Length: 339
Image (tube, rainbow, N blue to C red; front, side, top):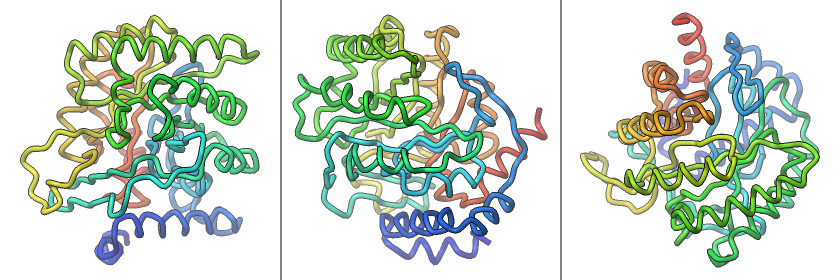
């Protein structure tokens, strides 16, 4: 059915179509019979996974960026995901970058976004999560980012404030320092700045009565030396995992007319780069922390390969856009048959 609907949906501006999809899921979750129907329609076999001290009903999660303000967590969970990562959330609301800022590269099975962390901010998302009826067995993570106008030297203040707000509401937290669409943000991946930031986050968490897993999301564009430095700092700071990777600034071989747009590229063109990063990270951390793989996962074969390469969990975004609401169920059925 989605194959017939997708051409109509793709006639709309990409960001408008995305908003309509979230609205439909939000309405469905507010009407119990509709939510029940979604759950029944997209029910899939469980494939339990343990990571970060948490049990996930299956290894497939929704990457941050899809539901920035936690508007449709229950509706999205009904599609079969084992976890939903909301955000990126910033302390204060911000508009993000000017539109248009989201582009479909249909010929390349890809997206380019330069969203810039638009969202309603920490208070709104916290209110949404606190009032939400938690989806059964689905883990919820919150992806954290600094406000655009917060100086890099003061970034820790933003992240710590977000950690305090969401620790009681989330199953895990993700420190996002790798979006290419907030000026200067990726500088936080450098050894010294990252060490200062993660040290502050670790000290903050040390005072909590309950340890909440903290993951760090890295860019695919790091050099080998930069990656080695970042991983060393992450391990020294006692972080609980790595998410690899965010979108890429690299270009090459794109066929779509939107291929020259600025922003982060995701989808099929990111596959090789993301897998190369996963391979390096898994080898470097050597089992000390789990790795979540994201970027270019568009098929069952992609999902199997990432898990076989050592990813504890995988996350998708662009694959859902192109594959539709039944995509997660199909992936889980395929993984169950292969096990």
